[in-house]
Image (cartoon, rainbow, N blue to C red; front, side):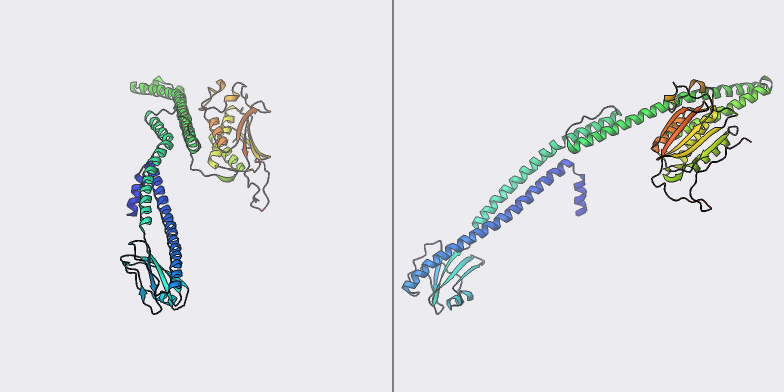
Length: 484
């Protein structure tokens, strides 16, 4: 039963719930008020009846003292009102003519007659009538005055309270319904607006900001969510458009070269129609284009994932990441010399993402660095930052290109002939932003480009890290990687 009621309640609308709650609250309030008022009224009526009985008994007692208990005159009963009787010393009683019979004299009343106490107030209920009887000792006997315990005023009061309560419950339900409708009107409009957005897929339609308090904060939160979705959709569209543009050139070149090979092969003139030198150059070109497409696909995948990553953040030595990235870069480009000058600096980050960013910086510098000049990679701690610098001795970056160096797919005019997708530095920017750092570009002392990354040092970087021989953490210089 309880689970069924719970399921029913959960299926009700918020408006219905508020109406039921309002009506229930009013009903409970009316019931509690009725109980308290009934008790107070009953106590007041009982006090009034007892005071009247005491007053009437004193008048009867005065008459009995003057005339005696056996001779005092008891007027005939008028048919309603108080009831009286005289209790003589021997326990016998006298009552007015025509008066209804009272319950027998109780043992407590007899003790009053015997002088155990001066008076006694009794109340009792029977199947027929209940009486309130006051006994007052007079001489060697006592007089008793009684009234029928009348509950009709309380019953009438209860009926009135019941009618008022029902009226209040109905009125409360109606008022609660109206209040719920008025209070939830912004929610209804918000729901309708959200439904329109879901149906039309139009994320540009902001929901009007109305109301105050929680409603206004809810609307603002939904508008902020819509703005974030708009930005995400625009970013996706831009990424798709840029990717389509960048993929067009290598795919077209691949298609043309492969079609040429297919035509020559079908004619049987692959060996005679295409000299060995041209065939080697064509195959090398195909391999380079496939490698470029693979790199572009990997970088597009990395960008499309955004900040979504299964890699956890950990405390790491950035020097280890830089050394690993340099080793990977050298394996990919053996002809590029990389000189490392790194100091152990502890940061909080994602190792794989940071290594990818450092690798992209080194790859970018390797494209521009002359054959006789190494790419210099420096890492040091500067205040609360870990500063990574990648320095090449190339022609440098034009001032007009500096603001767009980290943009997606942007490639300077001088870099059009070089391999690459224009995504490497944008990935660096995203990784650095995700780690709370900043990336910048300047001209190096050797005339080339100087790419700099600043990352915040880990707050617990003061951990005493020991070398294998037990020596404390050090500042070290890793020898440059020479050519083979």
